[in-house]
Image (cartoon, rainbow, N blue to C red; front, top):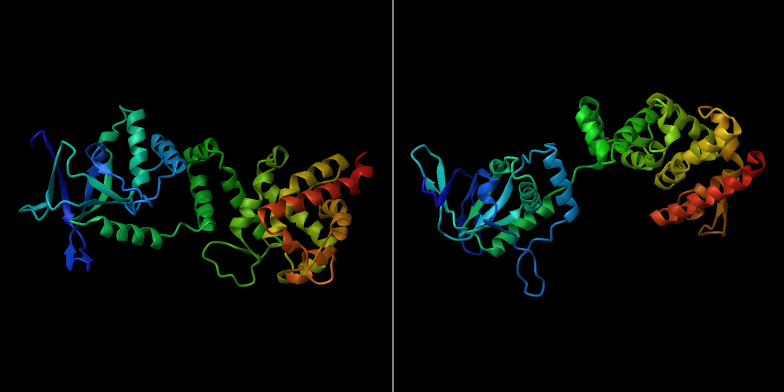
Length: 381
């Protein structure tokens, strides 16, 4: 092969109808070495003032995360990128074997326009620069190439790809992450380095808690119907972050943690039994209640230790929480104030709904924390 060109073996793909031109444009599929592609692609970013381009600006955080993963050899980029060659030449030539050969000048002319895949390419560029001996030049990238398109068709394809794409359900992501981490010690180490291993432990704890008395049938996992469930597993997982990362709680074995959480909620249930007889009518086992009360778990555990009470006994949590939860009050939208169980009622009768935002949850948990401290002050002195 001539030193001034490189050749890419391709297979013909599905044609694209382009009604504006009244023609069909061919696509080809194959693999490109990143070293052959680097320096020969352009990313047509959107410039609103000129009404040109279509790509959003790349996310630096996404690129940096992918750089870390590539360096650790934790990802392989198996999905294809989408490129466009706008010029009519060069064009893949059919060989006797039935394959097509694309011959590209090595001088950087006839660039590829990146329709989809800019984060992958930009991350690879950084990795190759930072690790020149890492064989990144030969890194193979699955590729789909459109020939003869213009910016408008590329824009249409970009919109199609990105408007129809759907990110993975977070509930499913946590479930898969937990399953993989149990089988792969290297993955667990990698998650520890990225400070996200708590998600694995929180997913495991959520699954264990869901089998116990207070939460059986009330947590909805990935691909499960809503039915009579009250909350997504993802919300429960996220709500447990502070507890999972708390030094004291972390000393317990997984099943002991589940026992503590179950006892915690049994104590709450004893203090506010009305909320658990008809739980759909109350927010305490829904997002606002779960986020706030799970955030306060380490605080309650510290009080239990200071009081010399067993943390796995429902009576401990009832003793700590009873007065505070029964006297908890807030403004509703009907007669001014809701107290105790009524505070957690859904809709206009209750007050908890006004704390549903992230900022509102912070206000509510601080309100409960202060009242806990005040109500227990004599016992703790």
